[in-house]
Length: 116
Image (tube, rainbow, N blue to C red; front, side, top):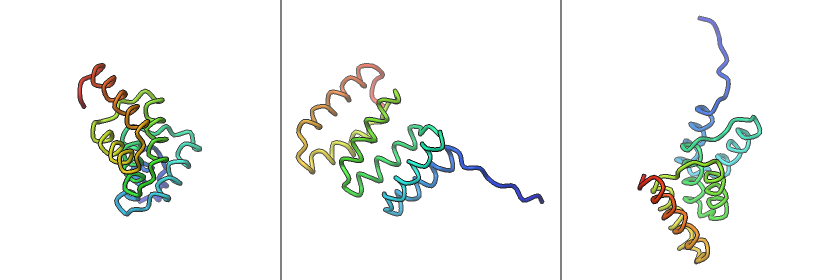
């Protein structure tokens, strides 16, 4: 059998990020995420979701909100589970302005596409 190299792609990067999230290695997940973007690979909804979960579990609310902003700027529709993690973070850290903005974004999203 020939030895073939597996080239990193969106699937391999996302799988690695998911493994880091499950292993509570949010910083490693962020490094992989940045490398993916530097390699001109565009994160998909699964990638963003894994990153948001990893940062949320580590109580890194700034990172979580930045990732959510990237997700919305990429015109992706966040599942309601992502909003749950975001709301937990902003409530935990008393970020009322962010909570109001998230609520408005969720209402807009539900009005456009229904709950996900």
